[in-house]
Length: 348
Image 1 (cartoon, rainbow, N blue to C red):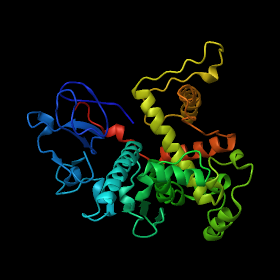
Image 2 (image 1 turned 180 degrees about the horizontal axis):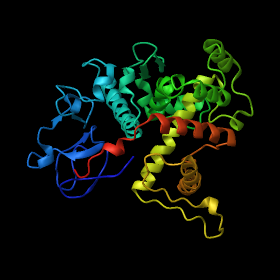
Image 3 (image 1 turned 120 degrees about the vertical axis):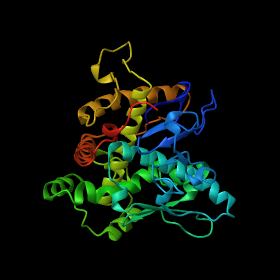
Image 4 (image 1 turned 180 degrees about the vertical axis):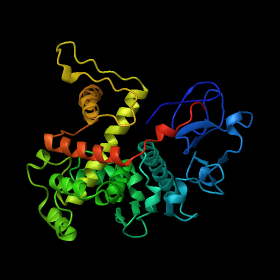
């Protein structure tokens, strides 16, 4: 995520802010500019800006695009189903899910992936009234809102022996399924065959593959070829897990660059592999640059977490085969995407 500043006083503000805490200037996210802008009526850039109707119920700080009749913003209108007005707990979870969804959509806009043209929709459902299966089906992503509950999600993470499980991670994984046709399936035989060489043949029986995975688990050497144990279940899941991981990396590196985080490596060693200098991204950064900054940054962040008595912030080891898969995802995103930065207007 990039860093943002209040257009009135210059104070650091965050993507989720609807108000500057220093000068109380109202703020809103303008998706057509991929930027946080002022909503102060006296500010020239605020003329004609209309706030999303979900500002209250979903804590949405997005603005309607010029000429958009609304009442919902570009993000909120992608949600097809949500909890009812009388479901207080469900609506609280819904607001948390919408916050994660907005962060996902920001990144997809920033990468220039034309997701809305593909008919993307979301069902954000509470499982208290009955089972909800998080998943993707022909453009419709379903999320179990129970995943917004930290205690329940942590319990599920421990049951499945997962190193990492977040609400944002679920959104990123499921959108990985959604973008597969636009990045690979419709990209021509060369891209599809290259994908099959790395991830396996996606035509394998999906239901049977999941049954085997849940019955037998992942092979003991799974981390030599996959980013997660679940990625071993089927080539589609391997792709979705790898795509989600790619989004993790790009988002974290963008944040590191925004805050000018630099890793010079420990004084005790002069190993250049421990140096990271994340910089503002060009439109299509080389993958070697991304992974070259990412690994040293994670070493340093893990060391800081351990100093706080916590588990590693980044509990993954990327084997060479996994890096090859991430590189393929990067190549497809770079080929298909039109980075939003190219059309972003300066100023606020």
